[in-house]
Amino acid sequence: MIRAITVAALLLVGATAHAQEVPVGDYAEVNGMRLYYEVSGEGEPLVVLHGAYMNIPAMGEIIPMLAKTHKVYALELQGHGRTNDIERPVTYPNLADDVAAFMDTVALEKADVFGYSMGAAAALQLAIRHPHKVDQLVAASVSYDMAGAQPEYHAMIPTMVPEMFVGTPMEDEWKKLAPNPEAFRPFVERMIALEHEPMAWEEDVKALEHPVLLITGDADVVMLEHSVAMFRLLGGGAMGDLGKPLPASRLAVLPATSHTALIGQADLLHAFIEPFLKGEAPKGMFDK
Image (cartoon, rainbow, N blue to C red; front, side, top):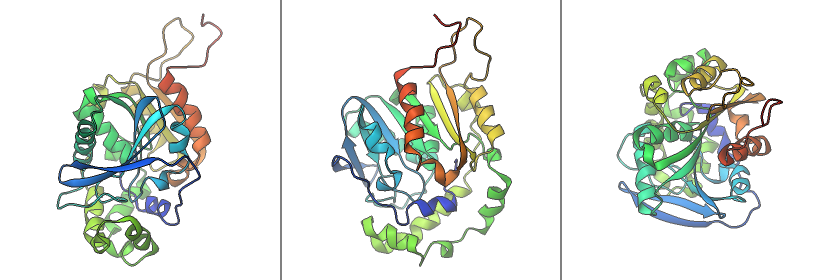
């Protein structure tokens, strides 16, 4: 989805790391933070950005699956996981600038980027604000305008208060990795403020030249109509089999899938992401 939706917080509660080759963890000094990241796998570089209230382990199996064919840089964003929070609003442009600065710090000139939920919006802003940093973009559960969110989500935003999080099992989980376990309330206040951040990126999305794979659930926070509209902004949605190349961007809709269920379907995600990053597409009967 496009924002730090409350239910996404449930992904963090009880999340466990899955069996995988042990990645190499380290910290990078980025915009006043000690940003934690892990590197795993070999191949073309791929930056992975988690959703709101999540961390690297909460992304589940998709990271080790992608690491079989890519050199994955998985980041923990401001105030998330082992990265400290700072006295600065959590905004999508700020998060995007943090990713760009991280890439400079580790001498990563350009990379493919995969983001989920809040991480997808940050990745989208990375492509908008730092286009030279992004090769191909995979954005799962994202929007370019707040109008694209479901009505129920709009109704939920004004009800969000810190007490929905403070003193809950989510705080206990957050404290397990947080550099400052006593800083949960100000972190939550920043995340709630993110819900009210204006979002109207239509012209920016239309101007993107990167290949983009949009992934959404058919019961996601983002309305299906909005995902299709975004796909059309990226040049998709025209009929194939007419002798013209297919557009570089793609749209995948996962069936019977809510927002929080999307990231747990690693096999399906990988089946969409890997061919996209390789530039592979199914052949039609008129393709040579």
